[in-house]
Image (cartoon, rainbow, N blue to C red; front, top):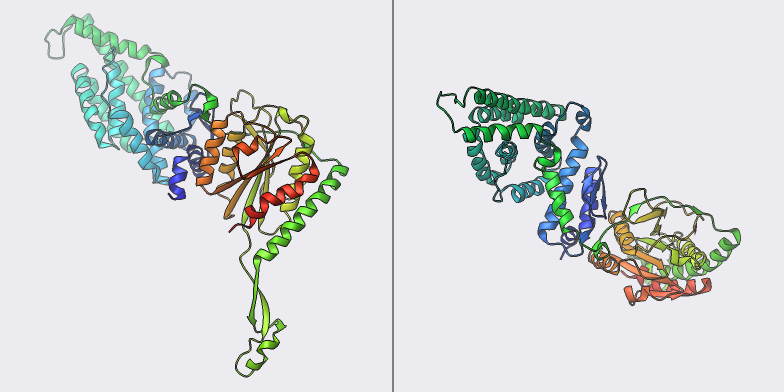
Length: 519
């Protein structure tokens, strides 16, 4: 199975790729699906996702990204807006921004059309208030412009609307024709929404007037009084309805379904850490000196191996060291010298994940020194890019997602600010997902994630699922336990543990000897 297929099956990676594509931020964790105009939040997702959930996540991200990119939310600041106007505006605006996104990113059109078909071709229930069919009709007409399969429900609801409110039906259809051609901005959508609400209000006044005249219809024949009252009362209720009384928009409908799919126990679900600040300071001078002595030994051994790996047997050349065994060829060949051949060097990104949870309280000094020592050894090697991230970072206000804090970004110059204060839990799986999101697009051919930890992750299931997907995407995982061998049960065969700094060089050499040099 190729990497594109595997990428599409890993929802955090799908979310990251789409977020970067559209220029929006996506977070996964908690129990709600929503957007604040800057960030799209998905709830904790199931560890196993079927095609319906994957398509729904993709389409939801497309839909909400369209709003973030194209909607002018200032139009909602008008104090005179009623819930009805906002609801109709959302119907028109949803369609408008999706058209713009699909024009700029044609690939998202498939996701959005799938969602429209999924949501609006189901058998519809008749609402208790017949006037609610007016909103359903507006919605289905707009959605049938893109997906023909919606036309069946549009016609069913349209026939009922036409029978109940014939004059209003004709006027709304005339308005909808203008929407399709002239709704180019959020302000246009608001203007058409206000016009639609005004038509509904005019219909209510007309029905009220007919009621006072004794239930006479336009043709002069008496109508069924109770039926006339039902229509008139229904439209009055529609005009006075609150947000909770009106049908959900497309975004709200999908958000509800995603929230319903979230696992009851978040620890048995899939979530991703978010970036957050954390205070870290420079290691003490004595510790730096000690670490550098250790890391120099590791660097020397790795560098020596790299040279032996990249240098191959010498070949004939027109310059170099004279090859006396080829002097007899001087009359017909200039290749009488020896030149050292070289294979292509390594091209690897190594990202270190440093556990700084509360349980590291008595081990943080060793872990910080070990982390700096590894980074110091690797960053000097040509062909290796090093990054370091601590987990968890400080919690965000009103944020349920786990956190991480980048300490050294790939391409950044190495510093000595590796001293951390431990706190919080151990969101290892969440940190791995975040790291893969950041590293997937790096130019290096190989990507290695090295975890330094002392214990078990908060969610073993999320961690194992992240590693499983990561391996399929080409990531390699290694671990170092600090005074604890728990990491060896998560990464059997690819992890070791140390109890003192002096063990770092031989331990890391044992792990990286095969990891870095493997072709």
